[in-house]
Amino acid sequence: MSEQNYTVQVTARHMELTDAMRDHCHQRLSRIHLEYPHIIEAKFVLDAHEHGHRQAAELVLFCSNNVNLEAKTETNDLYEAIDLTVAKIERQMREEKTRLMDRSGKH
Image (tube, rainbow, N blue to C red; front, side, top):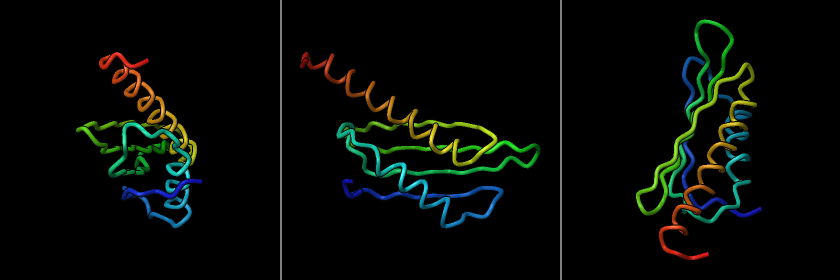
């Protein structure tokens, strides 16, 4: 697995952030193997809604060339929300790369 060369910030709202939560966020991000857009910084916000049992994970990636990607998922399980949010970000990264290639005419 490649080493992360960007900052990962994990914040929790309405809950206590555990090492397991932080580690899960770092592990999921380390599995992203896409090279474009180049990630400069990643910010995770984990949230437990006060009413009900919904858990939310939000991820914002600050990338090179002024590209910012954002995704949020709400589920009953926080770890599932983290996984689904990272999957959404990966999809957005692939779309951004395709958009760049279409603009530049490189196929």
